[in-house]
Image 1 (cartoon, rainbow, N blue to C red):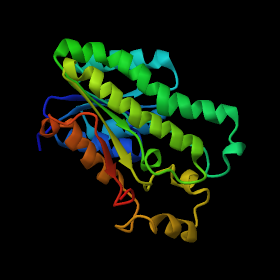
Image 2 (cartoon, rainbow, N blue to C red):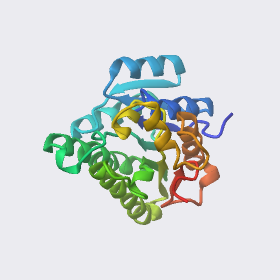
Image 3 (tube, rainbow, N blue to C red):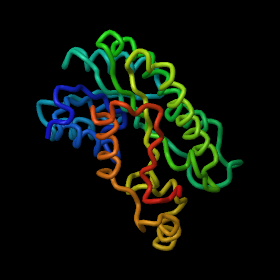
Image 4 (cartoon, rainbow, N blue to C red):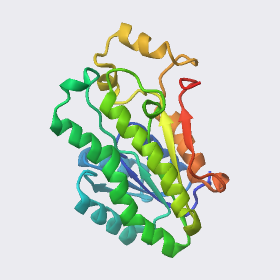
Length: 249
């Protein structure tokens, strides 16, 4: 259980769902973890349950100023940053693209898109000085095979996939690998928003297009993230890994 031994990982949106799954799985494999989340109560809970190899920070990824505070906390606690996981996400409720107001649209772009820009500016100089690192972005199958009703969310995840590939090419000479995960809808707090309404019939409708017949789980995503962030994936960069039970086939 040492695939990330002595590595330091920051995980945004780390207090619940996929992010919490990653934080716990990374810690099991020897990583020191920064649980960064706007929800301080849940971030503290996750960090406390992991133990001395974790700290938490109150981080609103829509705010540029909070990234430097997050990075400073990580460096003060652990002295380095090896892995940056941009996992925090936001969506509008499933429905007409014309019904999404501008405030919600701006939050989608700030959290799903601009936060990747902010984190990159904050961590790349540190990783370059250390001799390398890994950036992992949480995208979505929505960026590959869009569904009706989530147009602006879909577009933000398509952007994240393209940004990942372009970042990978530019940062490769600095020994910084950049990949992204493309999960299918999962058992997280955002599921109701994705579906529009949480009913047995709606769940079956969504699961019907997943060949393996179920939603993703935090452990599914955490295991994929663990591989891409470990040295086992040392020759993988620019990858958009579908963790989707066959949804995109």
